Amino acid sequence: MMKDLTAPIVRELLKKSQHIAIIAHVRPDGDAIGSVMGLYHFLKKKGTKVSPILPSIYPAFLGFIPESEDILIPERDENQESEEALATADLIFVLDFNDPNRVDSLKDILKKSTATKVMLDHHLQPVDCWDYGVSDPTASSAAELVYNFIELLGEEQEINEAIATALYAGICSDTGRFKFNVNGRLHRIVGHLIEAGADAEYINGQIFDSMTEARLRFVGFCLSERMTVYPEYKTALMYLSSKDFRKFEHQPGDTEGLVNYPLSLGNVRFVALLKEGKDRIKISFRSKGDFSVNAFSRENFSGGGHFNAAGGSHIGTLEEAKQKILSLLPKYEEELVAEF
Image 1 (cartoon, one colour):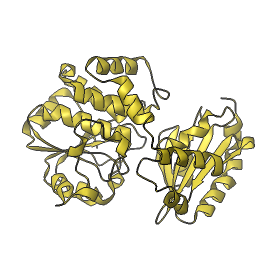
Image 2 (image 1 turned 180 degrees about the vertical axis):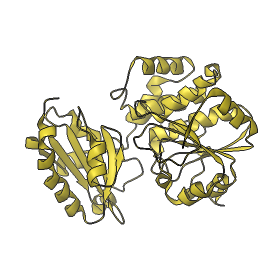
Image 3 (image 1 turned 135 degrees about the vertical axis):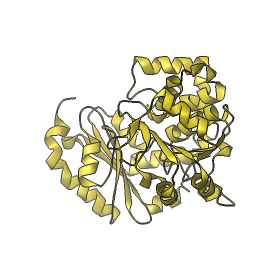
Image 4 (image 1 turned 180 degrees about the horizontal axis):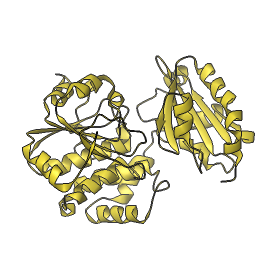
């Protein structure tokens, strides 16, 4: 059973560790890279060897985060550095995920490692395989949990510009520009990050206002050609085929935030975005109000996540996945059409 983190436990773990690895989930978003690099810069200041690791390439627009070029990624490793770093670490921090299967090709190394494993995550239903950690679904982001970790040690004064920039980027990303899951404490944290050197205007611009023309046209295509609204269920469904991805020369991160667009419609409370992959249909779910897409995904698509943001998958064709979702809507009609 995972044990709670306390300041004495953390100090002892850091004191006896010779090599620390930090890893986030596959297909990393702003919170994944922001939390990893925020903790990386904090621990590096202590003089310990630290290896930041991501299982797959991050979107190019997140490359502004300080020293992101130091991240070890299997796809661009020349000498299997990421595998070696994860295998030899004596302390591993897992951020923004709670199931070891979420690190793709690195999952076996993570599972077999005898290192002490510390989880900092905000998703529901964590797998009970970590030594220590924090599982807080009320947190806005893993980046917020990294801030709390630093605060637990009483070392907020150690937050410099690099740490502040990374953590601000993570929080800003996962809250959708401070639209979701925010409260007074979070704004106070963000205020401190700005005081410590995070340039809010610059970071927001890099994350949300640095699209390429190709990506903007891709988003326009998705909304105009691949979105259908079902007002009787307050639902919007979008889909993207492998042919669509090839047509627009899809790059990692091009669909980031796409699933949120239909929620701007006043009569939509549930959105599903289906993306055709090599061996399955990957599905992102979003909702507003008290409709749980976490429950919807777990019950029907072997997935999960947050109450209002979750993911799942379907083994089969794109059309089959679309029809499955449409066939399920009547079952959830009462929840979907309720006032919110």
